[in-house]
Length: 85
Image: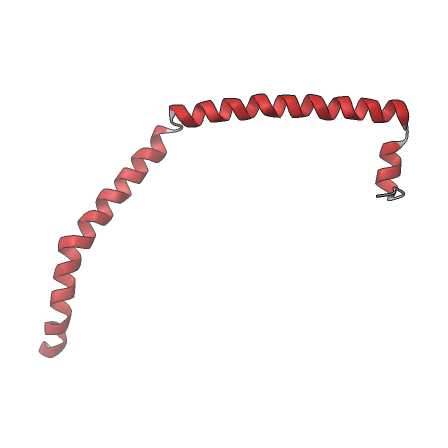
């Protein structure tokens, strides 16, 4: 039993001195970052993406209107699978 203890003591001491403190520090640092929310840069990126999303939504609506004008039953054709690719 003493022989096993002699082999486990050094790695345990090294773990407690080096790994455990770093583990605790990084854990609480990541918790703090998660609690703060979005950074200013991330918030700006999100706003830009929302503007682009609005533009794409408008374009899709316009394309749907054009399809309704030219091919009034295009939705039924797509839903039935009777379309040419």
